[in-house]
Length: 312
Image 1 (cartoon, rainbow, N blue to C red):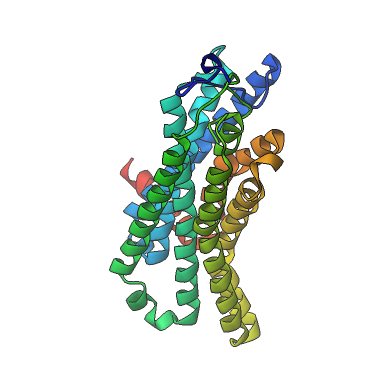
Image 2: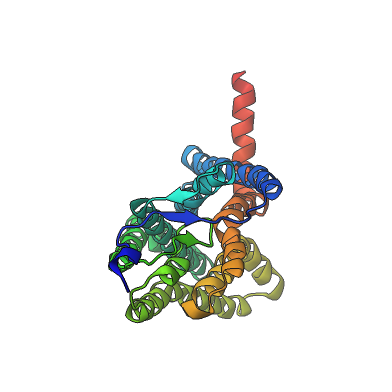
């Protein structure tokens, strides 16, 4: 291949969700509202947990960090997508593409590890309620969160180092609304077999190990619940784990469907639609799941509103 057709540091073009002007305006309005709701909802959860002492528990410590990660996760891709929907220029620099990819991986993996820590928290709450506060100590919770951030950033750094080894040919068009690694790999003229294998195996280990941990935790919760009086046991389990299970299902149900397949079988159209689910829809829904289905959060919100009214 001639050197004139090969580019080491290209400028990519993000094709986005649609090329129809009418559809782009509608999509811009829809996703702008969803993004604002996601950011405000997650920030509200964080503020409630910080300000209300009733929520100063290990469970809500994890929820506050999950809300922070969700707000950051959706902010990695959505602002650029919104800008491209109203702009004629849809390019992203090589450095910008890798930066977006880095933080997308980092926040996504942090999300999965936090969900695993929350599963263990729910197991301890049901298995040993009298020893819950001593087992889920402050140092253990901080350790879980810190480990989530460290592992996720190391994982992301490895992926980006691998991506920097690629060279690209004539095509610079990414059939997506952000720099996801699957469509970027498809543009490379470099042999990506080793990179795909490493990303697939290491990625499976990092993403699926928290998922397996969650499954095991809920299996142990089920065993514990079956030993309790039938009515009270199931009610306790549902009230304690219902919100977390909903979030886990939303997150892993879409992530596994998109990323655990070879690049050759990757469908750009399916990838775009499914990615919208966990980059925009899931971060938007999580605050509602933790508020509408949680009496503690609803109580904290009522107390905050009452204080606001009293001060006026």
